[in-house]
Length: 222
Image 1 (tube, rainbow, N blue to C red):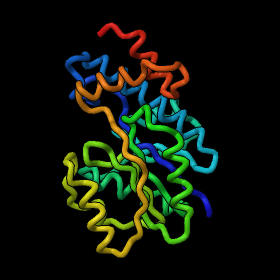
Image 2 (cartoon, helix red, strand yellow; image 1 turned 90 degrees about the vertical axis):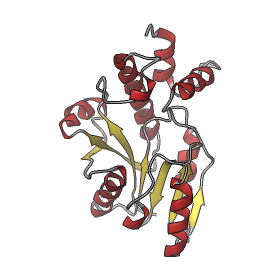
Image 3 (cartoon, one colour; image 1 turned 180 degrees about the horizontal axis):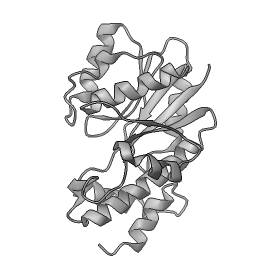
Image 4 (cartoon, helix red, strand yellow; image 1 turned 30 degrees about the vertical axis):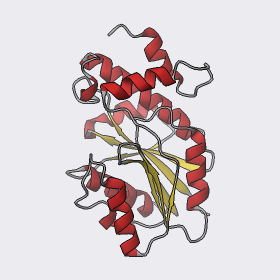
């Protein structure tokens, strides 16, 4: 298969603007620093995918300089649209317009997601007959969506931030006659309970790939 783009949906890590549900227990500055570590880990992970073109869809518009410094080897595109659905659809549309044969959008707040899941996603989207690859999050959303062609109706008027996102995506895909492949579920970090789970999960062997996030917990004071 031709070029496959994997783009991270990312925000500039500014205090009070990212991971606000983690403050408390973290300070606003601490939550922003943790998210910066998430980004560093996710960028390293995507960079390791030798079969993919790495990209970042960033917000806000004036955050480009930050991401150029963090990932100078990544394709950078600004997020456009009033809601998550529009931003996802527009980012994927941009990638298809550049000539990519398939495109993925992945989240930036699942630092412990195994790289094997992303490798599996690349295998699946290259499989004849598969139109859509979905990586479900445990909260009912998804950490990854990949397509061979843009289908805007998968993103319009979705019940974002609810447990209905994945079921509704399946329903719409079925209505379009799309063949869907799914990855194993994983968890992202939104709440203080998620934060505790993350810290525990990083307490194992030092070989865990989320090295920046691990270091945050080792060094944090707030």
